[in-house]
Length: 275
Image (cartoon, rainbow, N blue to C red; front, side, top):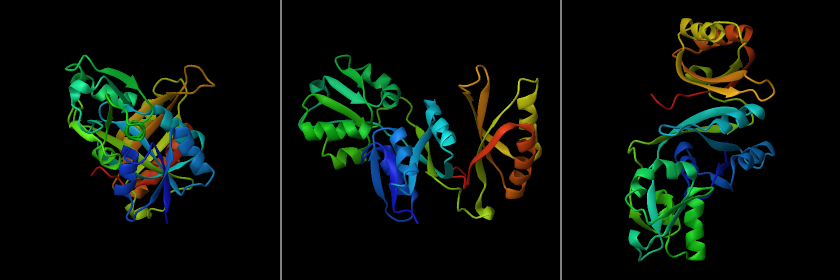
């Protein structure tokens, strides 16, 4: 049973929203400023699970989080897709002409850059977290300062929304992983997605051979992400997500790839949230 989860950010953040949507029962959240602190909370058993963003449909993969899950031997036990809607907010009784600075997470700023071209008087400043900026504006009563955050953040910190859904691409999703210290408790007959990691040597066709095994075993490759191996220049590890109809097909593929690939590791077996 999960009672509390570690999230990157504060209440009102997108990670907080995921914590409210994914679990069947309400859970408490442990607010962490960085993903490193999120992982530390999980490893130290200060929380039952953690929520970590893995990729965004606009900005792509959040590679450091893959590395953290791998480095500390954590396990993905579930996933959740969240529609990300960015909103410009500030203290009440202001409009956009009053705003001189907007602070937010670099990814949020990137996703909203076209909107701010319409307001060249506004200075954009990178910050650690979307909702934390909203919290700071309320606590310090910062006039003339805006935040880019969720509707929930505006409600929690009593800010007015000056412009809604300001992201350039309106359909903007982020995929979040629910991570635990131990492997999934999902029954085998319900598992239809997995995340794995492996390395290949420099022989011609090594990667293609492993991908062919996946195809032959009726696995559908939904994502492949390379990550440099720091200790070995110009060698890469591959993080791969696959979906399947029968767990036995994945089980067969695992046994073969374990022989063919180097450093093969299953990062998680769970239910596909994108059906």
